[in-house]
Image (cartoon, rainbow, N blue to C red; front, side, top):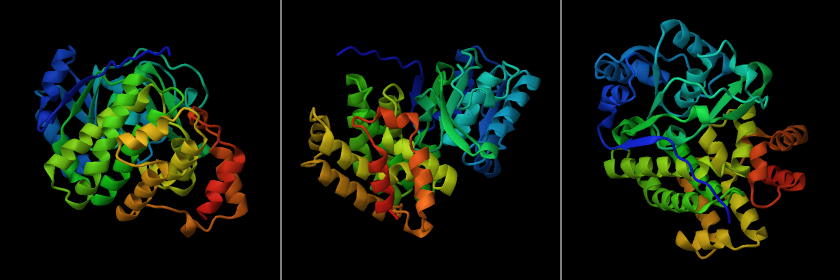
Length: 373
């Protein structure tokens, strides 16, 4: 088996380390930065606090972001970076802030709109401003990945852009920042971590280092996600979920995600189901399908390593967990028509679907969506 492993992001992990932005910028030789923040943190005062703690390195805040960042928001952020002559970017928040900041930090050095690269297959220029990523959710793993997931609402399109230009230079992970997450966000982002770990493990692009990361992250989620959900102020659970999130990010960055993520894009784009919840919705279903059709026994070994006798037992546990966390296990409230299911099947044929370890046919997708109707 031939494989390669690359991880260019410097990871700084620990309680209270969000105060180290100024020092981190100094190590990069940067002097003037823009803080790209989720709107909540601009309103709560956290963004201003981080600006004040940055030793003058951060001079302004951009927070005109939606939960699934639109291409127009990326273009607007890039224009601010161009005209303001910034030399680095800090992303504060969940996946939305990270996705916007990644794309804008590259785009600002061009004269383009991000639409030129969104779903077109055109290669992204590698030149970009240095990015420091400060996650406030334990879920996306975006602080260590080279992926920016963007939405073009005007054209009804949501898809990831993958480029080495999108790797942050530094991931500054302060678990204390995640204590502000309400239980529903904790649940949705936590099930996203589990999706990253399992999909990274069973992806056709799997490799030993990512496998080890996937197993470690999944074990942490199984133990600590229920605790973080029930007891939001439990610092040990918050810290362990942050550890799971970043390590699951390492687990899927190179192998890429698979069928659950492929199906999540239309579910979010068409029906506004939050990304993590949309991924978790089909995770147990694809776990059963993949285990039933695998030829190498890898998924069986994973289930045993996680303490389950087989894939059905793990899938049952995931299904029960979603119920306990108040997450979806079906789409019955949407009352989907046959035409809407046709559309879901069609759009689910996303490139990530072809990373799945077994072939997913249209018939399988019809069975999936009809079973959830």
